[in-house]
Length: 413
Ligand SMILES: Cc1ncc(COP(=O)(O)O)c(C=O)c1O
Image (cartoon, rainbow, N blue to C red; front, side):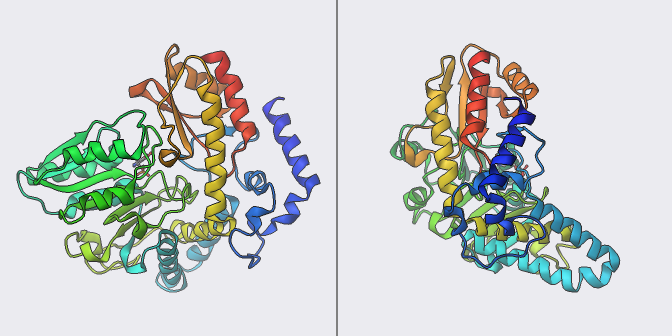
């Protein structure tokens, strides 16, 4: 079936099945129904219905939420609404009703991550959140910052800056690929800890392999050693239900515009209360409020719409989203494992798995395959260093998307 025909078939099927009537509150212009979060997600094929609420081009198979997620109409319409309200009376709105709504968005971010509101700063992206740590933490010459060789440049930039500033050593742990078990990951981290280690910065979910770092166990491992624990959460919230307290981290940074499906150039960073005297980013100097003398004027529409996106995700229900994306990624994993010319970089162990699946191509060139897929309307992420491709599975993806990808890959790899 051609992409356009596929799309219209799906649309017809959904209308016929009554899906559009079953979940009207997810669509724009419908008030929230007041139904408890998660309830609707149990009622059938909500995930196909969600797809109808996105602005993705007809027939596009979008498997790169890990780079940038498509926002639902709910979010986009909210941005436009706020812009109109703001522009009708900028000063009065920005420091009046809309200003108060920005603070509400911060509260929602806190609730979504299991933090207190005064532990949350709204940023522009993960890179900014993690750079705040690098710019405001004080280390000594000879101290060590421990990270891995699988981190994203957005996570590393602040670490490199901090290492330069302090004369500290940045140590990259070579990560197994794929890792076999949590124990293997914990062992390799433990081998690199020493009396000089002052900070540990690891992704929650690896941007390369999609591996879920065993965070609570890592926090237990370093307990009592006075090591600042920083998690790069760019690839987790919105894909997984995240509770920063349960993870045991001191700092957690994420982006609104990936798995959270929020407005572009939005982010959240959590600073645990107990470490706030050690990390004082200059733009929080006059407090953590969204607008303050030190943080200055903000993008009010994006921030409020990020808050609305948290509502939207919670209405679908994070447990249901997580279950869906994990099931889908497992389906993709099994099919990819059977494909000749492919080596899986993502771990097999269920406790290390996520909704990201990466493969190394053993016979084909990844850029050429990426381009050929793009020409067929299939969007994936290329990982140049590893001759690899990465596939993101989110709540709007279906097994049909995976089948289309596999059909294309069979001819290309
Ligand atoms: C693990 C990780 N950290 C940081 C980033 C950078 O995100 P942003 O551009 O939103 O700052 C990414 C982006 O893909 C990522 O995967």
